[in-house]
Image 1 (tube, rainbow, N blue to C red):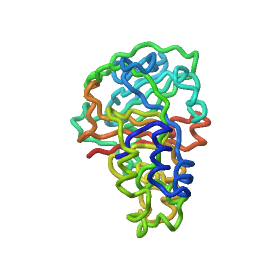
Image 2: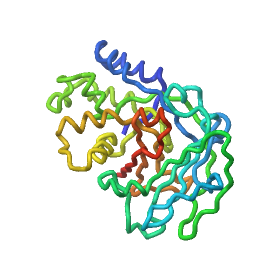
Image 3: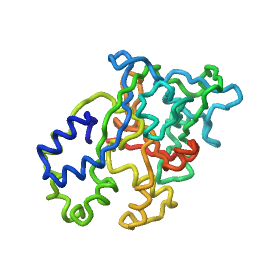
Image 4: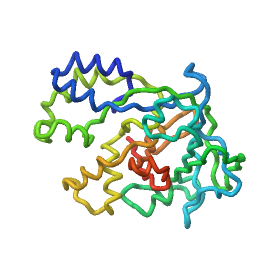
Length: 289
């Protein structure tokens, strides 16, 4: 799995290890992202938190997956406190984003949320609370335990598309076909090593997702198309290209968060829904080792 590095690191790696034309194309695909890190790490003031108990408007019910139970609170982000690049990424510049997920505590993992089961999407929720709408701290519902509260700071980063992302196929065309991929400069071990690095939990807003397994855009696209599209169908790649990462939350020992076997939670959204603040249309998937 690729790790996040700075714009300078990515540019230097591309210039050193790729042919000039490939480097230019690849660098043009980079997207800004916002990495969320523990607030005591010297990255500035807290902009939100993992775990603990959320602040919700009094008239807003705690998210529940009907027929299954209450969702666990994962994270809250104060959008006004994010780096300025957040606005360029289409994220709200004020208000708060809160993330909830049915993590199996309530029913001992009897019901699971999977992109391959569109009806289970009710088990993951994004709540946007506009600026000026007051919230009060809510107690966690009976039957689930809150995760440990960890204050978060933010850091602007550049992110690169992962192994089989749709933008690579669009940008490199036939030269990036499955038959040609093993010999493509982007697949060479020297380049892959040069753009890998960093560490710690990969909590992130925007940018490219960091998949534990295959590209998450295809999983969400499969769900958006009803779950019955062949994986080789061009319609699937086309739909995958319509989805952007909204947020990902990694397994994190500090917060006592473990998604399967060291997995990751992902929420993706279409650009038009992001612009219209229709966060209820975000789709969820998760992966683990």
